[in-house]
Length: 256
Image 1 (cartoon, rainbow, N blue to C red):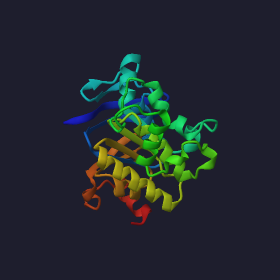
Image 2: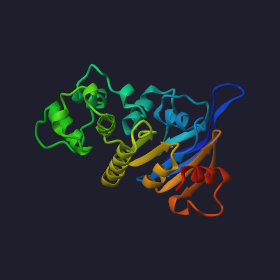
Image 3: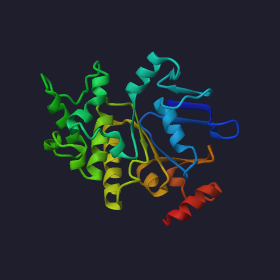
Image 4: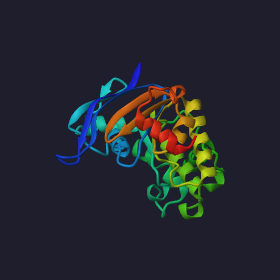
């Protein structure tokens, strides 16, 4: 059964330019889907639409059987509780004036009715909850009182992932989360996301220009070009002859 259904989604930034052009796709619960394409292909616009940060007038989005209506605040709030995002630049998403523990728990502060299942029984302090989240993403709990400027790029991205996981989302959207990291740290973050996805069975949409990262992490790949889906296939069919020429160009450029 499909958890996320996108039907005929079109986003205009002007009369002449369609950032997304009649995009349709289905994502099954627990699936890890990679969305790949070059800059300007529509990847980030799709991410913003799915997070409710970009409105749309044409098309439909259904999540867990309910239609997402951007104009309805109550519907959007419930939707955002189940859908979280990890952005490319952790520096811009972590408040430099807040210690790590406050940043990690920010989503839970906005949804006080959520009680994560990873909480220990009995009373748990806010810092203990933050420690539990940091340990989930492979960080030491003693980092809770540090500030973002005291962390490496990889540590900041792990904090961002911990924050996104705090609400135990059904869907995690990762928008180029490794693009600003060096190769070694990229691999660590990819392995972390893969491990967490397998442990929690959450659905992951991994958006990237790097088809190598998508191939490592995902079990299905969707290729976007100029706002349209030009290819959609399971990862084991990456080298099939019927791949779209643009997909083949991405593979060649990645030098597999």
